Amino acid sequence: MSVVGGMAEVRRRHLAALAREVEARGLAWSFAGPGDSLLAVYSPRGRRRLMVVATPVGDGWSYLWPDGGMADVTDLTIAADQLARLLT
Image 1 (spheres, one colour):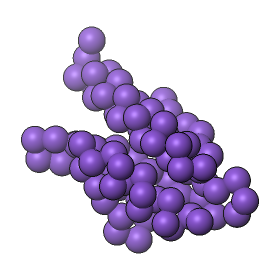
Image 2 (image 1 turned 30 degrees about the vertical axis):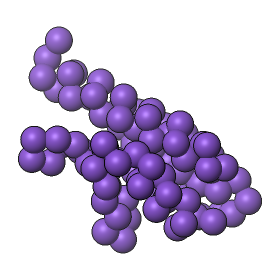
Image 3 (image 1 turned 30 degrees about the horizontal axis):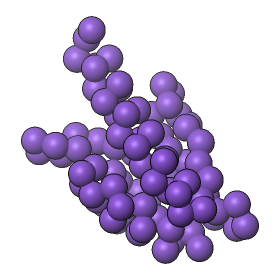
């Protein structure tokens, strides 16, 4: 497996974990972008949608979303709670 292929798999794994957390909060989601490299998160009742990316930062990974949103991937509940507040 190439380094790029390995990073893509790690990225998808992190996004899938966040998808489960936001779904537990009543939000909907879908993968987007080339190779499912983005997570689209939205409220089924609203029209607003946020795109989330997982990216390497230092020795770990972080989630990033518009307006300066950021959370470490080890803080899934914090990230999902922040997204839920923005979308509900």
